[in-house]
Length: 553
Image (tube, rainbow, N blue to C red; front, side, top):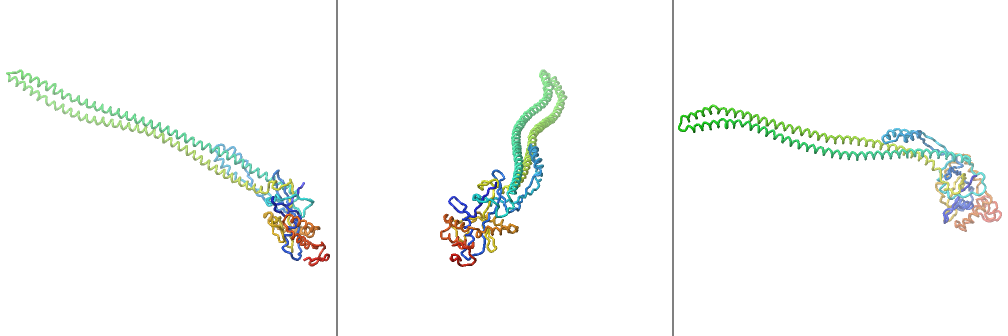
C-alpha cells in the first residue's frame, strides 16, 4: 500500500518552529505573491500543482527518492579490482615474515593496479538533500488517492524495481570496499607485526654485539696486559742472561791473566828469591856471589822475553773478548727485538680480533638496516597503494550513498511513499512562473508579498527541473498547460469560499490584518470573473455589477 505525504506550499513560524498551513491559507499566500497592486483585471492562471516523488525504503533504516516525472538517468562510474582474490592470497600466505614482505609487495602492487570500469544507470534518482531540508514539514495527504495532475513516467513498480537495483548496487559496493578494507587490515597487522619483530631483532642484535664488544675488549685488554707483563719478564730474564754471559766472559779473561801472575810469581820471583838467598849464603865468597848473580842475570835474560809473548797473547785475547762482548750484546739485542716483535704480533692479533668482530658486527647491522629500509619502503608503498584504492572505492561508494538517507529524516514514511511537493504555477500573458514552497513572514502578508523560500536549494531544484522538462518534452509542456487550465484557482467552483476561509485563518494567526481580508476576497472574485458582492458573473472590463450595481473597480 502506498502512503501519501505532501509538503504544503506555505509554512508559518510559531513558537515551536515552522508549521504547515491549510490549503486555503496557501491559496491566499499564492494570490498575495502574484498580485502586485490593485489594477484592472488581467487574464492569467494560478494553479496548485503537486510535484510527485517516490520515496522507497531500501532497508530498515534507509530510503531513496526518485522523481516521478523525470526519468533522466543518474550515471554512476565504478571501478572493480580484477585480482582481489589473488591479492588476498598473497597478503595472507606470502607476507609471512619481514624477509618475504618486499618481494610479496612487488607482486601485490601491479595487482592493485589491475582494475576494470563499470557504469550503472538509475532512472529518476535524485539527491535527497533537496527534500530532506524540509523533511519535517511533510504532512499526511488527505482525500482521494487517484492519479496525480502530472503524468508519472516512473510509477510505483518502476520505483520498487529501481530501489531493488539501487540496494543491490549499494550492497555490492559496500562489500567490495569491505573486502579491500579486510585486506588492508590484514596487511597492516602483518606489516606492524613484522616491523616490530625486525626492530626488536635489530635492538637485540645491537645489545648483543655491544655486550660482546665490551667483553671482547676486556679479554683482549687483559691478554695484552698479560703479554706485556710476559714481555717485561722475558726482557728481564734476557738482561740477566746477558749480564751473566758478560760476567762469564770477564771471568774467563781474568783467568787468562793468571798466567802472567804465575809467570812472575812461580818462575821469575822464585828464581830471584833462590839466587838472592844463595848470594846471601856466599858471605865472604864474593866470587860465588857474583856467580849466582850472573846465573840470575842469564836466567832473566833468557826468560823475560817470554813475558812479552804472554802479554801479546793476552792482548790478542782481550781483543777477542771485546769482539765476543759485542757479539753477546748484539745477540741479546736481537733476542729482545725478536721478543718484542713476537709480543707485538700477538698484541696486533688480539687487536685484530676486535677489528674483525666489529667488521662482522657492522656487516650484520648494515644487512639488518638494509632489510629494514626495504621493509619500510615496501610497507610505505603498499600502505599508500591500498589506502589510495580504499579512498577511491570509498569515494565511489559515497557518490552512491549520498542518494540514500535515514528514513527517520522524513517522519511517517512507509516502505513505499508518494511525496507531493506543492507548487503554484502562475501563468500570465504566456509567461510561466513556478512558485515553490515558502515561509510566511512574521509581519504578515499583503499584495506584492515576497517570501523566503522554505529551502533555497529545493526551490532552485524544482524550478530548474520543471523548466528543463518543459523545454525538453512537448508532452510535459502540454501537461503543464493543461494543469494551468484544469487547476486554475479562478476556474474552480467554490474557491471563493476557500479564499475567504484562508483569510479568516490567516487573520486568526495574526498574519493578515482585518481590513485586508475583504481586499483579498474582492481581488480573487474579480480575477475569477464574479462580483465580489453578489457572486454574479461579470463580463471583462465592466465597471459595475449588472446584478447588484456595485462598483467593481
